[in-house]
Image 1: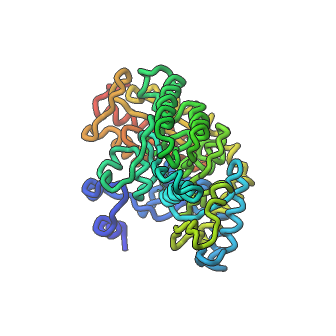
Image 2: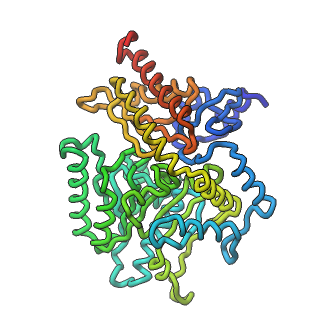
Image 3: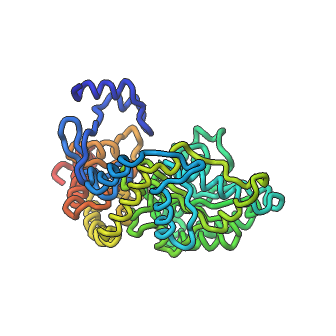
Length: 460
Ligand code: PLP
């Protein structure tokens, strides 16, 4: 088996997610064989800095000895047994730990294995909560509010609360009804004024629809502080806090989807901490195992949990579960991941390095096609525009952003595009030197592509 065989078999047998396979099959695939710290190494031995944290999950680096050790230790005991009708040691310890590190009185953990499933669980729990407490009074509480451009995953419930036309439009006939609220995408909403004015406009609109429809709304789901998949839309400061207050005012459950922003990504363990918001339900995934194993969790407060208690014939049971719910290997890794985050003071370190990164990123504004740089902690989006005044973006056919991503990869950096936005999601343990390489490589890639496309003269 050599790299040519693998390339051929990949193209013949593997259907890649979110990928136009026609284009993919015309290109040379990147086939990863190994990982070492912040680097991924392909089958030809070429090294790449993982500036995407392997889809926003990696915390301490690849092939991390302590995480490897935790996995081996657990696999030598047992790999999996079901949580249906029995418990297991790592899932108990992890649930206790999650209750300790999440804000407020969140304390009841329901496990699953992907962020999408964590969202499905949150939606079903929120809906059933109202039915459990008063099915007559709340018979119409079956709608969810989410933001324009929201992304909460790819299963049908998660897509129903999604607001990204590109991904979600085709599935519309399959979905349940969502109430959409405006997203404070300040860069593209200057007609309302500065970010503070954009925030106030969006909150006003949100309050109007909550006022009119609160009887029908079971919950509001939001990505706290940053809408990741939509292109790192960073919300104006205070937005989440006021959304939380509106939910309280209109008796609507607040669901914080921390799948992307949780576990240190924005500079605190959970993003909602930054605005002192305690949701009723929180979804977690991605970084929970340090990027090693699929695991997700939905954590809720005592009041919600209590509503599910009753005699069996009352049918308050939560009829939901996945085969690998509470898998021992994944839970053992999550415990070790959190232990390492604490012992290595990772959150403080990210806060310090985010400031450094923020200074370094400003250099990208020297390049005329850089319209906006958005950053919260280790989540970075660079919006590429044709014209800074009009903020018009390049078409897919013009192929500017994907060429930048491709050029960066040629130069040893893995990052990805989200529409017109170059996104960088460095591994949380990356050193300043590695962050420098990431920013410099992005700078060079934008410059090279700008010259190649005739957008700036070669001498510039
Ligand atoms: N929620 C948010 C905010 C996400 O960003 C994602 C994935 O990117 C998901 C949910 C879905 O997670 P998964 O891909 O693990 O199903």
